[in-house]
Image (cartoon, rainbow over all chains, first blue to last red; front, top):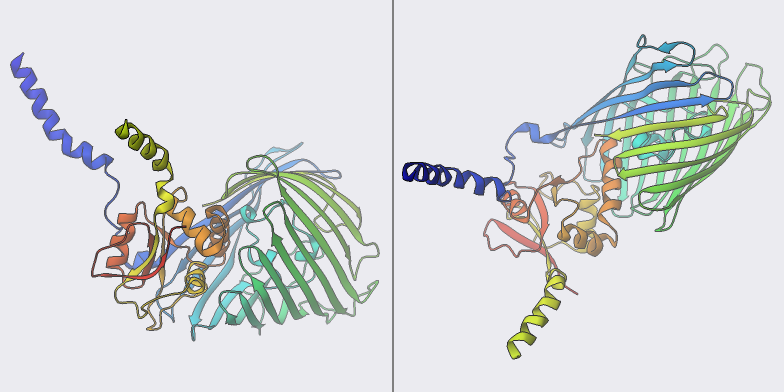
Length: 344
Length: 141
């Protein structure tokens, strides 16, 4: 017995330092010397269920995106994002499906910090046409469906150069000018009423951007890659205001359209107003109204959306929304939609 | 009796003792500034000021979301909350910016800042270390 006690005591003595180490808060910093510390790997995923009035209920992995960025020095700051999108998983009447996956290089560029206030971006990037486009990842926006105004009328990507000048770092006052001299690199396959662009030039003036307010104005001239020699000149203004009790967001857009294709009016124009109100813990109520008129569709579209978003943690959201549309339709069919989105 | 009163007072005051701590903005001794004002600190943590004057990358360091010091830092510098700043950094991450690196404890922040040339952090413990300089002090209210 004494032998056993002695052995036990010895074992405890041996184990004690490990137990103490295990419960001691970290007193060391991560080793920062590796070049890997300059690399950030992240991504997001969105699983979407849609039940539009005139189509079958379907479940799809709408986005699965991985992005990698490096911050090495003022000359070398690469960024790449690869995205698999619109992968059907299940459809009413057809059952489970795992037969299609589309993958695209969504962004691929390098940033050169010419001076502290001037940055030159070269490669494929998201055009700064509005705030929604540059932060469009599903976990970062309030709704499963995107407003028509935020995406329909202009080039969402450009392959070329973007020069950004920051007038004032704190207020976010900045000017960006971009130019796509040739065709877009690795473009998404087109669906109905979508366009590829041959040449694009544009700019955005961020008037103010901080934690509570954003206001920006954008211009874009684009030559459409079609047989009707179509050109588009768009002007827009967008903004948001985050108050403790609500968040208000809006965008107004006008695009002058010059085309040999038969069209009903020589412009697109529209806008939306969106309101998010925090309810009880982690639940938010979302409401949006949008009106949009298309150059090549006779009827305008009017969409009212109401929904609930549950965000137990900032990087995870569960969305449920009803969308009611009248008039023409562009990816905004009436119906019930839900999604789970996570940023990792 | 006197001892009981003192103990009682201490018990009442102790829960609020965190509110007494100052917040120190610290940086590696090699950064080419002697002090920063509140706006400059905000610009760094909003990832809008990215380089020190000598061209070295600025590397802002954070504490975990539940840390009291982070709560106070968010309130002092941004008049905001850690959640709101977290959402902002998530958006910046999607835009290709690197959010502040999180260290698990104030001691870890101090050691990180001591070792990495461009690092800047915030702590409630006043560091006594020649490798570190204090760029700003937010006094307790």
